[in-house]
Image 1 (cartoon, rainbow, N blue to C red):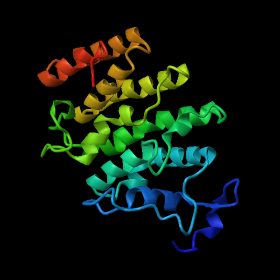
Image 2: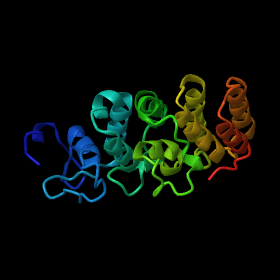
Image 3: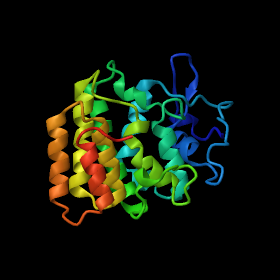
Length: 238
């Protein structure tokens, strides 16, 4: 990595240089799409596992304008990059959102901005004919794509819940509700239903109302998705 971004760099509490936002994005998404997980960390020239406060700044910036910042990557790069960006132990750490030492307003904003990923990336680029919950083995199924996969598994991979901090769950459910109401790609609907199914115990009446409203407003819904929605009402999703 060149030193051209040094003037923009910050330093952690140990005095190690934290990568700039552009370096962070490149580290997560700029990988060969045919071998997305074979590239080792390049930490010999800068420190890129940012402190939580820095993570929050970067998340808010990425989720604010995902199409502009990462829209030029191909679907495989987007799929694997988004997975690694929200996977604990990946190139980033989404568990920053549970760090109660950080301002709630910033953490709440980051969760709310996830809707932009749905609207600007998943809605436009996920394959609308693929319903991931119907694939027996997503990793080996010919129809499986990295982008559809991370869309479907978003709320699983992200690993945050509202059980320790109810306001996190309340905000996340709000994102899922918006997806069901505003978007049209079945892959996005499936993802939101999957997430609502996992959050069902958090607020059963709210979850049932959101799903019932969705079903009622889509009388011609794919029967497979209707069945999945009904299962999600009771938390019966994998």
